Length: 259
Image (cartoon, rainbow, N blue to C red; front, side):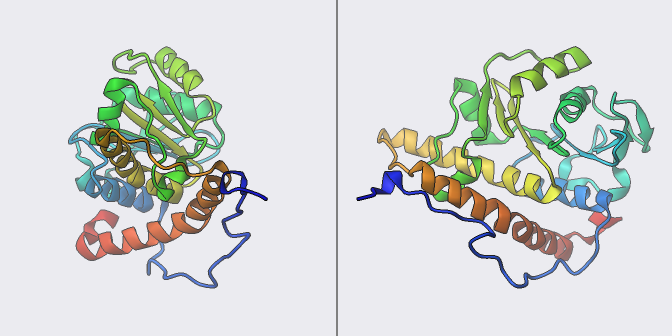
């Protein structure tokens, strides 16, 4: 007899896919989509005031969109975004960009799957970062991080040159959600939709894990075969739906994000 712990339950669009989902209602340019991501994540509590950056590849030459230095995430509009090349040299935009772009350029250079790179300091992420703990998967939504979590244990200060960026990229390897000791988090994804969904969900996952730790009780186990199927369902079905709903909500409140 197969036990729950041994069960492998498939998930994702191979099991079920919706015939139609509610649309955003407007076609977004890449710059508009990225500007929306900044504000969505700011409103979710992912950003720490002036800190953090997101890059999204603009073309196959390695040019990337990035937020300007000095604007908070919740005030970024599409016209504020800058473009830098694969070495971080500014090519477009009216503002300066952070020297910490090396976190992004080196990851984009070695990870073809990482078309979007998100970095900031969400509160409960940084609580765990302070003590060197990865969040346990204590709830089904946390399954979206199954097998993707890693911890970089050495704090090296500001990543403000290519050598430090390359070293960090090597430590990250193929992981897509990486907590940095005494610092914050890096989330990579192939699309802005998946990057935003995973980033918007990680601090709650860390808070749940933290609160379970405070209870002093071991969390109930979620079997690996069940986590994998749930991960497929969350990412394959959920990313676009989360994105569309978050953008609709944002545009009702802050249509200037598209300007």
